[in-house]
Image 1 (cartoon, rainbow over the protein chains, first blue to last red):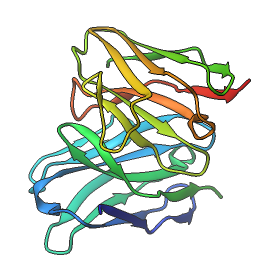
Image 2 (cartoon, helix red, strand yellow):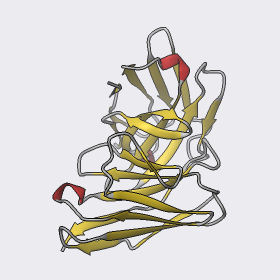
Image 3 (tube, each protein chain N blue to C red):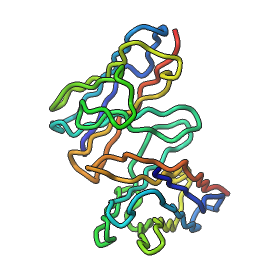
Image 4 (tube, each protein chain N blue to C red):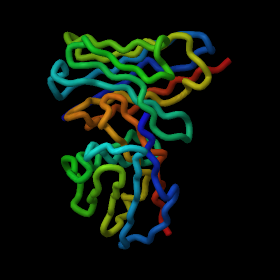
Length: 117
Length: 108
């Protein structure tokens, strides 16, 4: 059974940094692209970033480009998102997702990030 | 950016009845369209991909149709567990996914 477990969320002041982790199990992590999708309180889903299976290719939404960095450690079956220069509008639940045939076929339970003073 | 527009924003349907949800893309996405279900406090769940293929474990009462710019999700006979928010998503521009704003399916 595929399991994705996010951690590292919390409260941070605007301008601060946070690193999210997503521990994966139940599948061969190194074979699949992974993605982060966020959801602001009471709002819809917004794609944030994606990374290829080897980590050699990365993609970002314009809203986070230059501030967020996606990475992965295939030896640890873990996906990361380094978030710098956080803004109030980055406040959201961040979901990691496994990508199969271009769709997100498995999702983690989410990590809440709150950027507020 | 491909903009996805869902309608209606809220749909009220009685249990046992059919529900029809719509999704429109601002430009053709071929059949690269997925539907997700999200219940309160839970992560989204993949229902349909390729516009019409049910994901593993999804009941047959869920069906998807359409191609190009117009898509439909139909739930043939609503069960209590189907009341949730539904999102469409295009992946024609993978990985630059875009989602619709969601349709809330509520009990009438």
